[in-house]
Amino acid sequence: MTAYKSHKNLYRLQKRIFKALLVGDCKTAVQVQKILLASTSCILLAANEVILFKKIFEFNHFLGSTTKNNKYGLFKHEIWQSAIRFALEPICEALSDDRNFASTQSSTQVYDVQKVISMHLDHFPLQRRIVTVSLHNCFHNVSYYKDFLVKNIIAPRYIKGDILHYLGMDYTASFSQVHNTLNYIFAENLLNGIESLHYSTVRYADDLIFFFKPLDDEKLLYMKLYEFLLQRGLSTIYLRLKLTSIFCGFNFIGWNFKVSNKTSFICKPSLAHYVNFTKKALYVINNSNYKSSAKLIKLTSLVRDWHSYNKFCNLNRSLNFLCKKAFESFNKDLNQSLYSSKQMTRMIFQSKTDSFFTKRHIILEYFFSRFCVVCGKF
Image (cartoon, rainbow, N blue to C red; front, side, top):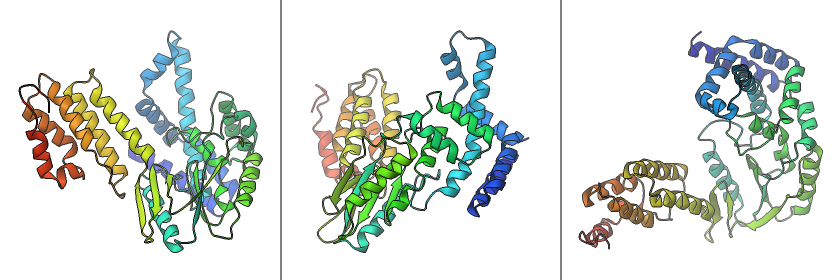
């Protein structure tokens, strides 16, 4: 069976599960789940995923001096986990709310958060308060919420037994993992329905935003959140609500949103996101173990990802000092000349929308003209 046929068969079965849950037919959904788990396409794609993405040599490093039988058993165990994930993915998609922007695997879903927040802020810009909530530290105690998770998840009985077994093997519900893992699906099932606590909500993974009007009560929302988390067995010790005004601005998933005095919407990268990016770039630039070619590849990838993630933002934070640091690092290499260092620096930054190269060519030429070829300094 080819990979195309396997993907087609798996998608057809997942689509049947999704349609059954949309009309509330849980019995049919469970029956189709059994067919999906018994299909050859599901097992082949699960094995292919484990081999390609999990890297089979990681199992050898993890096992050490164990026998081949144990190695095969662990490999089979990982394949079965991927097959269970294939059966649970359409359930999360069907039961997720429209205000949950992290339920799908689309790479453009994160940019819809900007559109929805701008719509909320432009509707009544002078009467808005923002409450931000982070539930990142609420998934630590597995023994508290595993009973609720196994009881409420839609799956065959033997799958629920395997999930209970996995939760006893240090498996936790978490959004910090990769999207296509059981940890992510467990966390999505636990927080399913949290968007209905307030009429105006935006959720991305474990970060939530509540938009308040002047007559709305924050204490009532806190009590609803507290009861919601207690009902599911999640930790309420680190539950904190942060109330801010739209004129002061707030941070959400690496962006800073704000409304100016002229009621204009502003979105830009947050300070924490910018500092984290600069730390990664400076680590590559100042690392003497990397050659110039390795630095070129790593810095190009970092800058490209930075501009790709913030392509719909106001990029007023300049990268000029990173350009200067990169040029100095390249020029210190004995294998690079002044011309090659300038070319490598331009390859990293010139194609991006940075004012250092796009708007101020005179400053660029003045910057390179101040460099002394004899002493190698500015």
